[in-house]
Structures are given as structure tokens and as C-alpha cells.
Image (tube, rainbow, N blue to C red; front, side, top):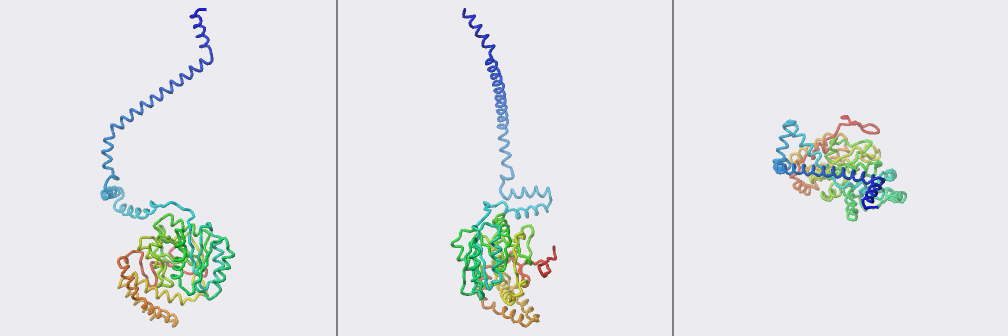
Length: 424
């Protein structure tokens, strides 16, 4: 067979085979895809060329963008836009919103279960101790993240013995019991625990809770949420039930003039920057003093009404001796005025207390108030020093006096089992 015949037969065999058809189809598909890729490639090159031609114009415009301006010019530019869009009121509202949400832009890394050091003082509190521990056993918070420290303030009843028994009964809780040889008061007792606990702790928060309380399950979670949301918050108070404290607070920002330390979460960094309690107060108003020092140092004081605890306050406790509360409330009111008020305000308060003494009909109460009005004089030299060291900051809006009260109060009416606010 000739070579030409062989080529002809070979061509016919190749063209008639299934393999030939498959190869032709693959080649056709590959060619089409290649054309599409090349078309897209050249299209991108054309777009890039157009963008490149526009880049000088883009850079020229970018130099005059608002964010490239200096801060004063940027603020003026934005204020002009807001003024044209919303008028003068819009500028003021934008400023308020900027202050309101500034802290939200500074959120730290969220830690869902931070360690907390719990501090509680006990003084002749035998009847409250079982309920206090039972409530802690039901708290919705990891027990390994909590360390409960209780100081017995030289009780005359069986409080110290009962504290030890409850510690053994609730062995799953991390509890430490301390005992003082004398009554250090609320200020001195908490300072004692703080000096004992903080040097050996890495916890970022300290929770102060009265012994005559029963904490609710989610109280700590909700207080921690306030702290995590705003890193500038130094103190976050829980709302006490059934008789809530009547002091006012902003329902939007939750800010308040001062935090009651009957149930409050304190940021450790704020406490260390501000200092501990003032031992001179002993009892009552020491939490107001700490709160105002927090404000002066730039920390916020807030209250979370969703975080609650049951508190057997003086008005609900028939066995409570109210003479002690009356004495220290009056005496320490002089402390607060000398530390934070103007000279005119101090003189007004002295006249106010004299008028109260003159009008008091109960002879026992009259003696207590008069003694308190004299006893503050023992601390007058140190109070004058405190007055002049806080002098530049007295005009802060959070510092307000109203008789024996600190800040504004809401109108309320007490009921046998609670309290009703008249402005809600």
C-alpha cells in the first residue's frame, strides 16, 4: 500500500473515532473560555487606564475632604452642614449626642465573667446571715470567679460563730471570714478589707454589699454589663427593694450624683485612683464622699435599675436603733459641707441645723442633733485642709446639697411593704 493510501486510511480512522470528537469539543470549549478571559483582561486594562487618568483629579479633591482638614476647621465645616440641615438646635443636639456616646466608642475587650472581690461587714447581724448566704448560693455567676470576704466588726451577738458555720455549710463558695477587735464602722471596716484583699488579688472589680441584704440572681451580671459598656464608669449601684432609694438619676445615661455602697460594683482602677473611704466619717455619707471624689477624678457614678437586691432598711427593721443613724447623718453632713461647699453654703448649713434643733419637739432627738452639731468641731482643722484641697472642683454639677440630702430626690410615698414614687 502506498504512503498516500496509508495517510488517507489513517485520517479516516482518526476522524471517525469517538476520541476525535471529544478532543474537538474540548478544544472548542477551551478556545471560548480563553476568548472570555482575554476580553475581561482587556476590559480591566481599559478601566485601569481610565482610573489612572482620573487619579490626579481624585488626589486634588481628596486634599480638601473634611477629614483631611485640621480639627478646628473640621468642626466648623461639620457645624455649618448641621446648621444648614437642622438649624442651631441641631448643632446643640449633635454636641450632646457626641458626649453621650463618646464612651461607646472606647469599648474594651469584653470579658463575660470578670473576677470580683465581694466585701461585706457584719455587726450584730445574726438574724440576717442565713438569708445573705442563701442568696449568694443562688447567684447566676460562676462561683470560681467570686471571692466573698466578710469582716465581723466586733459584734456582741453570735454573728462571728454563725458566719463560720455558714461558711462550712456553703463550702462551694469561696468565703473568707475576718474579725476586728473593735468596731471600725463602715468606712474603716471596708478600708480594712480593701487593704487585706487587693494586694493579693488581680480582680478588676470590687462589690460592696450589706449583710442585711439578699442579692438577686442576675444582679452582678447586670452591674458588670454597665461597667463593660462604659469603661469610664467607676461605680455602678444596684437598685434596692422593696424601698428603693429616692435619689434621682438620668434614665438614659443612668448617671447619678452618688452611689449607695449598700450594694455597688466599683472598678478597681477607679478606686485606686480616687482613694479608699474617708475614715473620719465612720458611718453614713462616706459613700457620697467617695462618689463625689470619683466624679472629681473623671469617673462616672451610675445606677442600674435592672440590677436589684433586697435590703432590710432601717425603716423596715423594727429592731434597728435609729439614734445612731441620726447622729452620724447630722455630724457627717458638716463633713460634706466643709469638704465640698462654699463658705456661704457652710454658713447656710449651720443656720439650717440650728433651726432644726430649735424646732425639734422630741427631747431625745434634740439632744442627739445638738451633740452631732458640736462633735464635728473636733475634726475642723482636717476638714479645713480638705476644703481647700478640693476648692477648685466644688462647682461640679454632680455636687449638690439639699438640707441633709445630697442631690435631687424623687417624690415618694412609703407603703407597709414597699415604696411608690409619685413622679412615675
